[in-house]
Length: 110
Image 1 (cartoon, rainbow, N blue to C red):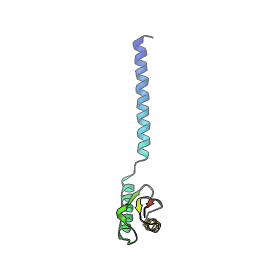
Image 2: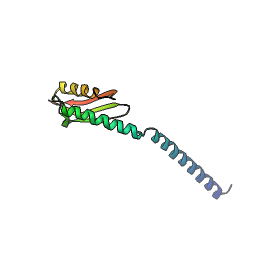
Image 3: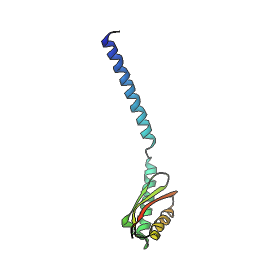
Image 4: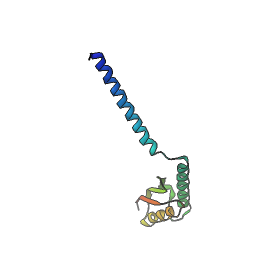
């Protein structure tokens, strides 16, 4: 086997390996992307939770961030002034149609 043929084989193997990696990576990324319907549902849930926090006199929505993850799971983050306000935020999130779980990561800062 000549050196140029060995180099050509090595390059071919590298190209095939690289293409395989790109294909596998692309497939795994595509599996985790939301459909348009899921994105819209998540946006509606986020908006409704934020609206309920804003309209509730017991919570300060300005300090609470809301993010809908997937499957109706909602994450609350930010700050509250009391444990009661933190608990109320969880109740309000659960009261929204489509919410399946609430991750309350709010920090109480009196």
